[in-house]
Image (cartoon, rainbow, N blue to C red):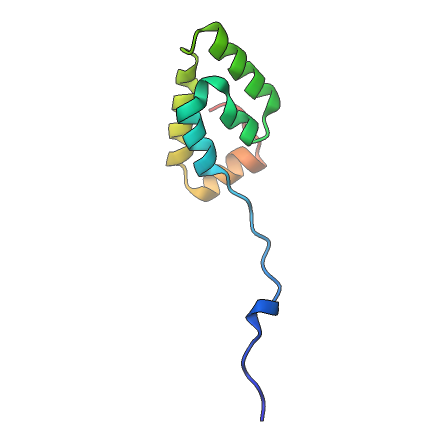
Length: 92
């Protein structure tokens, strides 16, 4: 008798892409003036610029983060991944 039952626990798993869309989007909306979302996505230079801009403008620069957060959350997962994590598009 042949056992046709697969051992799924032992099967190789496909490589999963890490998508930071929701985390980056929510942080951009909540803490956009501090550039936290830029650091999460690995954009250190843009994050420092966003932080300085937020401090110099007394938080008014946070509008950029709000806009970016909305843009992040309205993109599909694949669009976000390709644009911001693979393509490394730093602004908007």
